[in-house]
Image (cartoon, rainbow, N blue to C red):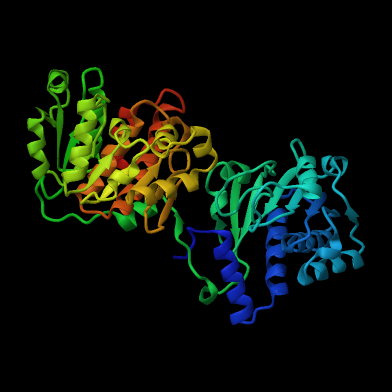
Length: 492
């Protein structure tokens, strides 16, 4: 997969570079020139006029890109200084060429990165490490990143903020906090996933002349809101409530009856044709009649509806009793149709994701960070810092689609496909929001969508509905039913 929404790992980017240089014969110096020129033009486009710029260069090709930026800003009348972190004699050939040209032009090239030099600059260009870096910055590079801490001028990172893993978004040790990150050829996956996403801030993509024929493609896509929904929306078949998709929600223990109600109502607002709730008997009276469009049946008799349901939402408000956990495991093991498991349903598989490997039908799990940590048997802080590894690890362990909720929602399939959604606003972190997402996933599964596609569509629809709710209500005080009400307006 390639195109405007493709996300590239360091390995995928190296493969594209190598194919362009070795197979097509495009000189690496040409690609470096295109990259530095694109970054310089972006800086000039947003600058009020010539100013002071400090270009912080490492000893790799990212540093070479920085020397090209320096040359073009110098030509545009800027006061330019290059500060090098490490031994410039170690620069690879193309980067060394541009280092030497900068010096011949009279651009100051100073060894060492001192904070006093940075605080006087209007723009600081981070050309230290680039896409291929992993681990914790050390030595001169670590000191340079420390010198680049705020407050300094506008920080423009080339390809990836230094210290951010370009393939995963993880940060080990110090990292540059950019105001703008200019990715060359395509956006790097690490700039789309927290904590790398916050370090990258505003991300722009600059084309540098790598032809489509050299692009090895990627396994990750940044989902594109309404564009994603329009392209992927399941086509309607027939015209009855059953052909539109029937959803069964299993949940609703006493004291938790709102969760399955929101799940069922969200499924209907996401264009499912019919929704039922199967709830523990003592919870049924609290549910009946609250939403006239949703029918309620007591458990275990309500499980007879499994045969009529096109998709099942398993767990919202179900409780964590031994009986509830046994029910979740039995439905997961025996029901052959599509299932989305959330909330209390996930609790049944804590530390035991392998139980889901033999599930007979399509499966989507929708944990938040805390739930993911319990599923994997790790600390929630580890999940927060390693979101991509966590979601892929869970998908592989369970052999099902896993949607890790957050400001950067990640949707991983066991075959390696990955969708990243930035649609949701901060105000979407509210009680019941997860139940709305679960109902939306269930509606997509009920329409026959592939499990990974269903989760991607649901993530985008949920996020767009949240944005619409925030526009209407303001950034504070959004509740889950506001999101439910907005769902029909964001769907194709």
